[in-house]
Image (tube, rainbow, N blue to C red; front, side, top):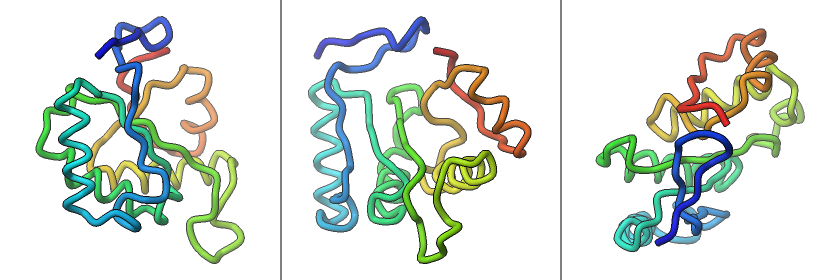
Length: 139
């Protein structure tokens, strides 16, 4: 597997990532999700991409359980926010408050206290919104 530096950080990510799309824990059963994740590690993939909306959190929850047995510094997680997470029309978007809410929920489902690195200026609106997100590095 080939790796690249993420931005100007020292963090190395595999050139190929494993994404959960809408399948893990919804269209693909849990044990197959685990098998796909284990196979990714076996070939050197260390970059896992998901989003809160994938199965309305089910993919993040599956990876939270699966990845919790691995050293946190052995993989890089990326998740995204924006799309609706419930039938409530206010439960979506990119306001500072909504980002803060969704990051905290994603981190809980992923069973970790940080995910992908973000630039410090990006954190300013989140800090004002009360986010306790801790990035692993700055990019």
